[in-house]
Length: 113
Length: 115
Image 1: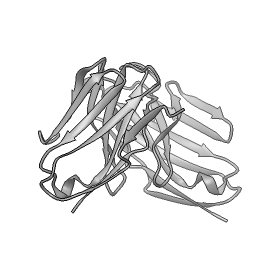
Image 2: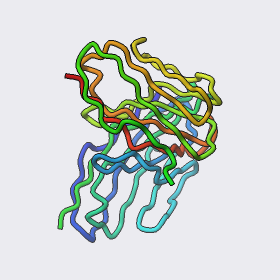
Image 3: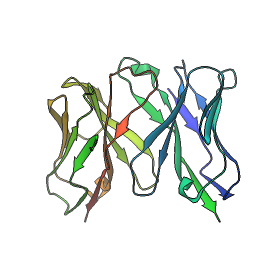
Image 4: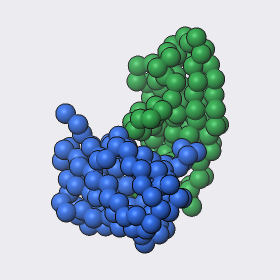
């Protein structure tokens, strides 16, 4: 089966850089996705990494190392509005023809002034 | 333009009642999902339909029954509600079953409270 581990909470100050880690255990691998969810809101897709390396999208970047079964989400120039929960997700290959995503338990990021 | 919509947004009901949640997507996607998010924010898939065909049916009590009248709609009916059913239920959609990016579009959620 698949499993993912993330820190439960991270705190940082406005303007800083924060890294949210995700380690995964899978019997196969099709890529790592990241979602953001504000309190009371819906999860929204942020990024996807299939290959090793860093993918940058504005202030957010996502990194993957397949050999280490590890990825991270990097948030730069933190803003108060970045306070949210961040989830990593992978495919469940036991049902690879169904598109089933397995989510990590989420990391709550608190940005302080 | 709402991409994925759900009704109702809030649902407060008593144990033993039967309730339904409706979901509609206007993205033209083939695949739709129901997720349950508990109080610890753990997000777990319950069901998925692809072009009206049930393709994911997780270990969910059979009091939960999904129905997809067409590929733009996916409803969730819950019989004999229990306290443990209290959670936020999200509908989501993706372009196809095997969207390689794992990108899914989520509705605003339905917060179900069973008293």
